[in-house]
Length: 144
Length: 73
Image 1 (cartoon, helix red, strand yellow):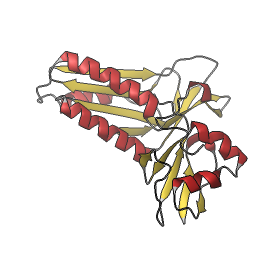
Image 2 (tube, chains in turn blue, brown):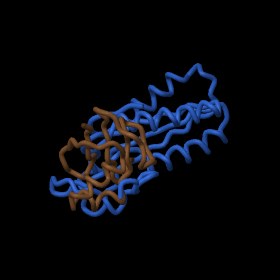
Image 3 (tube, rainbow over the protein chains, first blue to last red):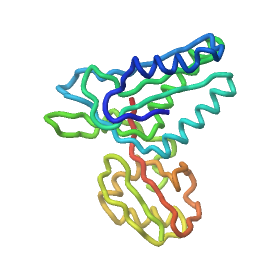
Image 4 (cartoon, rainbow over the protein chains, first blue to last red):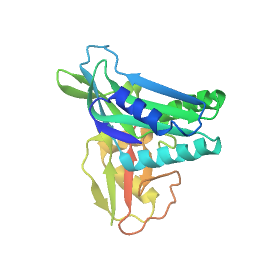
């Protein structure tokens, strides 16, 4: 798992991941790129991350991937990410394509639901919490 | 004493309190009207591990994190 301040250098990261696994005998490499779209007059999105819990979440996914003979990768941005640049990329390597296609779907969906990351719209230089697009994590409401 | 920290958009400084269980933390946090509004939507971590049991027993120096709704990517 890799965290960066500001937008991701997508080509560098995907290229490096590909090089690292060049001799690993994986038959499938499925990358996912999340790009900031221009909408609602935003200049950028901005992100807060709670790294200790994110690392545990990621480590658990790495274990699940390992049980299927696969590995997962991800990189995410911290702070402001301008429109038309990338805030999040992930990838799966696996021996065969079917396992990789299923795993990237589950991994990205659970990421959206349970990775401890908070998103803000940036408008006129101001950060506004994207409350309406955010999802309570599993177990939310325990202290209510 | 245990420490309670509020993550992301909650925008509140950490607080320290005496509490023997998570249920006691819940009672004390509800005294703050602004925090009380957040609680139904928030998940909870104890020393960076997600927890789901109100009867969880706390010890000196424990750190409770309040995690509001998320949206990565």
